[in-house]
Amino acid sequence: MKKIFQAVDKLLTLSLLGMMTLAVLFATLELGILLVQELLKPPVMLLNLEKMLEVFGFFLMVLIGVELMETIKAYVFENRVQAEVVLLAAMVAISRKVITLDYEKMTSEHLFWRGSNSLRFGSNLLLGQSRRSAYAARHNGNSIVRTPHTPRQCLGSALES
Image (cartoon, rainbow, N blue to C red; front, side):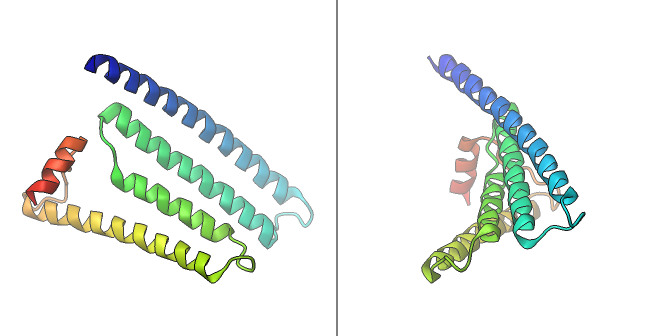
C-alpha cells in the first residue's frame, strides 16, 4: 500500500513539475513579447511608470514560478523540501504585491499587514540562515553545511537541539 501511495505521489509531483515548467516557459515568452512591444511603442525605448510596474510585476511572477519549480524539482529528485526556497518564493510574491500596489486605494491596516508579512518572512529566512551557520560551526567548522533532507530528519534535528 505504501508503494502505491509513493508511486501516486511521484506521478502527481512529476505532472506538477511538467505543468509548472510549461507555465514558466509560456510566461517567460509572454514577458519577452510584452517587453519588446512596450519598448517599440512611441516614445521608443521608454516606459512610463505604469508600464514599468506592469513589466516588473510580470517579471517577479515569472521569478516566483521559477522558485516554485526549483522546490518541486528538489522534492521529486532529492526527496526533500527546501523550506528556504519556499520562504524565498513567498518573499518574492509579497514583494511583487508591494511593488504593484496602488497606494492611494490602500488602507493603513492593509499596508501594516503587508509590512508585517514581509518582516515575518524575512526574519524566518534570517533565522534559518543563522541556524545553518551555527550548525556548520558546531560540525567541523566547514562552510559546507549538511542539512537534513527528509521531513523526518528535519524533525529529528529540531528535537535534538
